[in-house]
Image 1 (cartoon, rainbow, N blue to C red):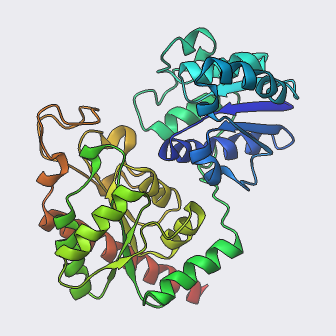
Image 2: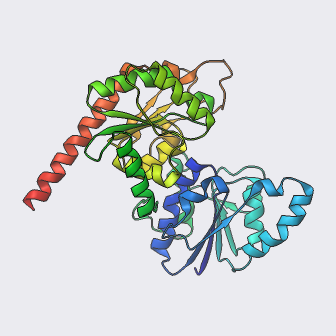
Image 3: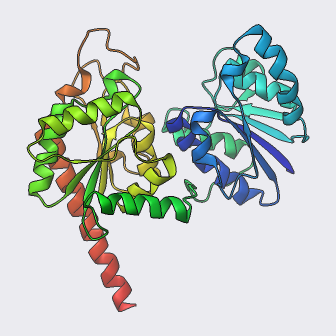
Length: 355
């Protein structure tokens, strides 16, 4: 294999789930040139990835009008075809990714088992041994079909020294120096029913302060800023609010320093799990078997509703889905995970000291 194309366009959480594919391919084919096609929102998470040789930006908005399509398709196709691909992996499984895979003209075209919108007519669906398992393993099954051994699952995220310093400086300015333990709350989500209520976050934040952990709010966008303001107003002691104040790589560095990250089934929480930070995920419309925190599925809290795992963006019953997950339940889980992490850290220090 000399040239390999991966098509995984969006969303941020889904692209994070696909990151181990880049490592698996380079582990098996270290001399291959790996090209990845991605949309703007998830571009930053792939930037400077040492296992990706080339990123091609697919700006979907430019193709929406007939005139835009005619104007953009030629240059985009030429960019795709600067290399003769031995294989393409369609990890998106939709019409737009199928069109990209088709235009790339790879000799071998494979994709995920659950492709839709005719994508299965362009790329051969791979139904591997994890077809009903976690989405990370489903993506890796496609890499396995390419001959990758997948000896180790890694989520490569390149954090520059500049972004790390910026994140450290921001935390210190907000009263969270390096020695101060904190828990990050990823408060937002694109799906309304993936969001835990603001008053629940506020109540938990107050408990964390009493347990000598600083609660830190993270997220981005106007809606998250509004939710953060609601949490601050409802708290006895206002949590540190970093919403809208970090880029994606700075957020990743914040997570590497966090004692724990809490949130719904959303991109930042999957990023935290990929970085192997202790992660607790609150789940309602989606299920832990497929979308839980990878490597930490025991830390998923699934709502006690008969309709959970419905996979609907908005509840057809009009329920505030995650409101049924009680603060007491989450506090107990956080306590158990934090104690476990502290025990592992002490054991690691003991082993290091006696070696």
